[in-house]
Length: 146
Image 1: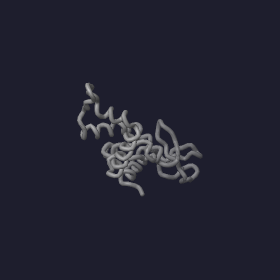
Image 2: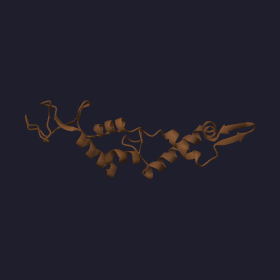
Image 3: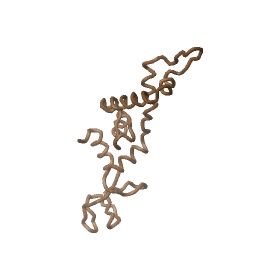
């Protein structure tokens, strides 16, 4: 099931790309090749390439216009609002987030994974490649609106 953002990104990809007949190696802006009559067309992104579908166009647009979420950094920032900035251990004053991350990396990874799941379920971050890369939903909405 496509989300509203996915549908808008697909519409954006269609407007930024051109129908292309690979057999005749010609643009087919009407949606049908004027030479051979084919409507089995690829999408051409000028200066980038030609391929079937819009997924690759969307990936290209996202890679050019957005910076993916650095999940570890974003998770650390979300925690920094919950805990004191520093922690006293004996005579040492240490960064609390670094202490948590280094003292129990398994727990840190588990907590980060749960945080990611929550951010996805709340619609704050979105992935179009099965969780390999995430983008902030508000950043996506900004590029769709332009």
